[in-house]
Image 1 (cartoon, one colour):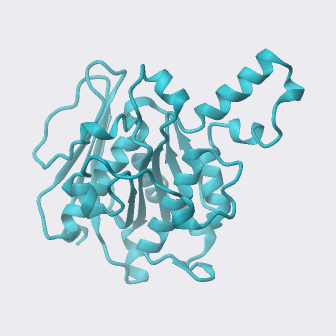
Image 2 (cartoon, one colour):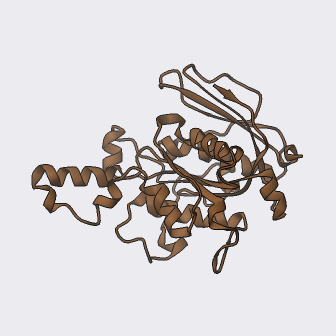
Image 3 (cartoon, rainbow, N blue to C red):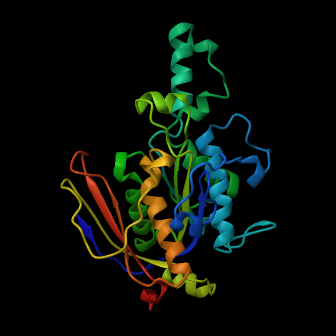
Length: 291
């Protein structure tokens, strides 16, 4: 499946990883030894209690991306709440919450489960929590789709915009690192962070004189291995661990980092291999491509 669509542009981007909290630092490659992200240092402690790690990181990335796009002021959103939707991508997001609840039910009974845990056991908690906290009332989707999840999330955000469902979409890609995730990954750590993008229709961005940071180009998803296309590629540093559902969004954020400092060649984001159930590719173009 390949799609070419009307111009959708990136007007905001954010990154939070150990060793990188800007798109430029991400594009340069986070150095080993970075400290874990402290969500309270970015959004304060209020509202973090009883939220899983992925949701806490999602709060930080949402605030950062909205702010970077000029959509978040002291009194909240600077555009209509209905004009901003959310697509989040995470394969391990609330896995620890689900395992904890299931262990409690198995060892005791359902009455022993925490009333604060059960609402967080839904797989869409990341997307819905970000929308509730920041008042984003547009379409709300959660993608848990394996290795292609992050690029699929960008694709669905573009689809919402080009279909007229929303003028703007926030894309979140987050993976937490904890004991439960490491057991699932056979001892490998996850990135414990992620990235966010704010996508807008070209018209919506122009109406508010927003700075275009990148243009979303063609997307392709297939059962075969990804087909190489011309363009620069960003590679996840091995020391960060598995990015999984955050990988595609991180690649797009790195492209923004390169464009911000003047690089103008296309960037090709790729997820999935011949060993996975599918692969996906997405081209990011320099701001001038918006026309």
